[in-house]
Image 1 (cartoon, rainbow, N blue to C red):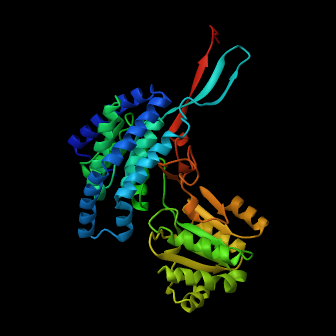
Image 2: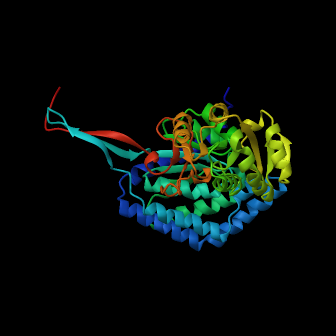
Image 3: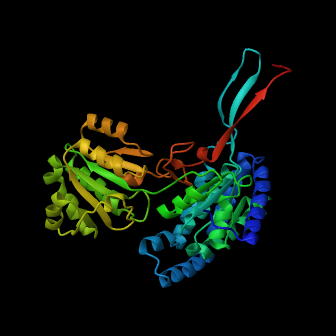
Length: 427
């Protein structure tokens, strides 16, 4: 049963959404040159206001430490001047990308002379509900602007000061460019009621995208009456096949797990073919031990972990389904490729799965049978990312199958409409 939303908060969110709809109609009229110029202005404003943003972020970090926010969330929350410049640069990269709006997806001239075209058009108003990730605030605003969508942002309270500073800077920059500042909106008050009001504002909001932990995503998917694109929970596996190159396997497993633990494309599970275990696991375990990883392994994994000096715990069934977002990894030795496929299919979150192999037939089976948004062969799971794929900043990584799947960039923030032109035809 959905909780009752306080009437004043519901009306406030509706008013914000109505303003965003007006802004969205105006954005739809902008040329690519106007949108790109605005993105450049936003980037310049963020660069100029970097110290202001970092000062606000310090407030969030201090509050987060006082409240016992986990280290992985503090890492996602943290902004320094370099990170602010990086998110500003991401806006410039978005400006350099092709504009999807107006692209002809398909078209033809019918026998009766009617000309029909399917065109990409903006969604309209896009709501974002996310946790302690202030970079998402900028990415969502930039991608929304380029794709002609107004955005309503509901960030977590942990990043409240940072998000307020970022949105204030961006709204001021938009206004200076002659663009309706309601193209970028922040719901800073109202707590969970504001989030509920946003995801039930059907008719005012066209799409809601959640980014965060499993609980947040499940809440939005379950309670929203606005269409939702499910993103982000990443129980990603790396499977090391019998034929895997030893050095390659070590590098890929280590990078996938330790490069950055607090992100959804970090590896959480390791599977190793029994015929490769004695050859590859000493090196893999040595690297994981050096990085401080706790190996939650089965009995066949234990000896390799302990010999390398890695912290070891017996793996549990719950570990197989856990997105740790920390220096922990579940690890099992499996009998063969079939066992690896069965294990992944049972426990995957549908985000990213990787195989390390020199066997083309094994690679083909893996890419064909694994049901995930991204399937990688001989590459780190950390590559599942809009920027790494060449899309520029991403709005999230969709783990569903309808409309968008995988890294969501500009085209995924559009829908289509049919334009039919005639000269008097009647049916």
